[in-house]
Image (cartoon, rainbow, N blue to C red; front, side):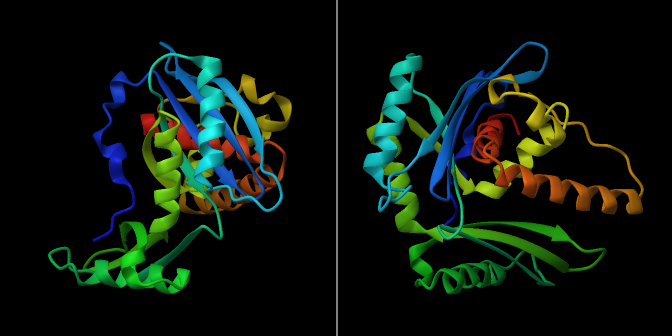
Length: 249
């Protein structure tokens, strides 16, 4: 089974003081470095918007290496750990629903097939990850999956390694965006009120206790605000922050 870069599971979360996120979205991207303070807040210490030249690829190893080497020279220090986020069309996402037997691997192969069909690639040429949600009682489950071409992950890995950095994981950019939105102090409306270098994030986001109706309305409202944020100039940096926050999730 080709699992999607689950290297973050080896992190010692409590010892992580700094973390980096590289968002590769559309024709631009962002590199953000976060630091955790004793108050339990995470602050931005480096925030850079990246613009790629026409005809080039965001996952080109040479471009990734150059970007990280330049950032590394400005901050110095030890080898930096990095979470990279990819966006469509480099990454695909979807879901399946059905009876899932936890003792069987048949459904895992089904997820792999879904990813390969979405990417129009053979199953052994894709990397994927998934999350299984229970739907009430019994064996019925909803499986949320994401995947990309193994060649894309290999290109990112090469670019990061050649820069002297360490790739901790690769994930969909939307995952990072949602993580950042949930942890952002002041919520998404504060994005237009603060410069990116002034953003702060909670190390442990607070979950509000809402009724089902309130929760549904909140989800719709947050989804709209998130789409607006991602479409704004701050969008790539918000994603990069969420990727870096994975060190403490």
